[in-house]
Length: 304
Image (tube, rainbow, N blue to C red; front, side, top):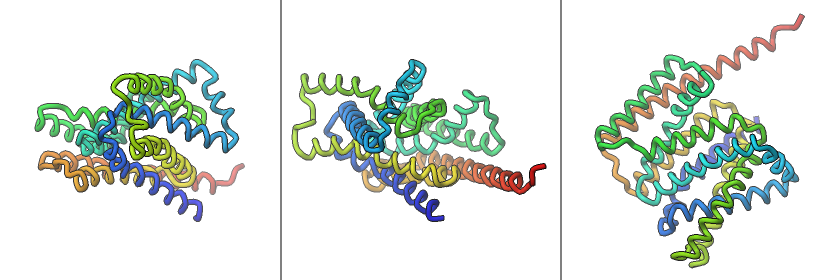
């Protein structure tokens, strides 16, 4: 019981940090998003490496990158999470945090569709209905604005593809993420070298900006470590439900704190998404309950 309670607390904390992270990236609105992304990558690599060194697991990083197959899989995962990070940073800095939050809301439904395409998974009627509602929301936004909500769709798709490819990664989450940022680090270093030799980079310009850029590693690592801790102690249903705290807080930051526009069309689209997630979550809870019941029944049957 204590372990489960600690897991829920860790999960809530990690999702709260992710959900309130727009406040941090808004403070770096004067720094180009690609430069912020580069620093996030490098400082994350430093922090994760120190954590693995402290745990005595640095050798697993070498094992994770020991074959071409692993490098290709982790390299693709790195590109997807990097693109996801960039879109999120860009969104916050340019007044599109609402669209970013929508992307993370529809991500579970995009992940369901990717599961159908990649693994041939079959959708239940409730899941089909939820996906249809999400598609309707996208159509509503597209028709009203004259253009598809590309930021939301790209955030959902990149994170969905990242989650999909991570299913093929055999090493633990901390080791795999460290490997991913390590693979991205040469690109990040190259971009920062280009930036500082051109118009001049933001790092070292003033104490506040430099400290904020360095803090990006901590902001990336701590919630992920907490999430990993929680995932080992709570059910998948609990994880799925608590994760909605992330886009909800992002939505709060966008509308209440940043004052981004939120009209009737947005309300209709978000209403459809929230309804879809309600049906999807209820179906997931029923499936999880049925699995646990079947497991208890099987355990209660004496072997012959």
